[in-house]
Length: 266
Image (cartoon, rainbow, N blue to C red; front, side, top):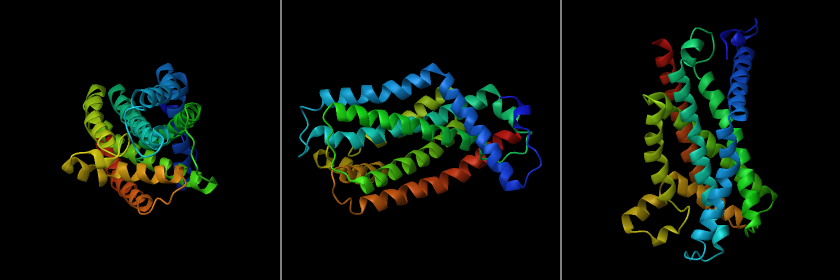
């Protein structure tokens, strides 16, 4: 994007911020639609994950219910978590390619560039989730959720993706290179997704691992989503998950904005 694209007309401040943000969102969405690797990731990653976990683990793990019904919320959140890390790669790429240097002279909000990536990735993860749910139905997923349950599931998924995208943006701003982002996201996302209730009941885990798994945010998100999909009351899991995600968002946004200003001032 050229700097001339970012020129604003004389509007009130709030309208200008919204206009800048929309331009940056469109920029990030354009990268997705024109990048074949990202398009393939959106389409094939959820299909591959669903088929592998469904048929590799499906006959070996006892969950007290159909394994595919147990699996779907876990793999949906795992996919959303990995999808959220795309924000860190996008931000790190902007830094490495000098995009932020080209934008720093423009009067745009300090969080605008990062927010553009976050919201674009929100759309991408939503599309991947729709594909995943479709594949899940094809391999035996039979939820009992009603309309309001699905709305609650959608809200939880969007809030989760939004929160983790902002947290991922911090890793992208801290990383010295795009390659560094890979190991940073790996050591954060893999333990949180696999040491959770995503793929096996936490009761089967060793004591100290179970304590961690049962009290970390991803487990609460998955358990709330699983209960809603099965037509059950999620209990405290839903609100505990929302509190966790709200805290992650509230902490991550100002840190990401500060780090962006730091890079823009160099």
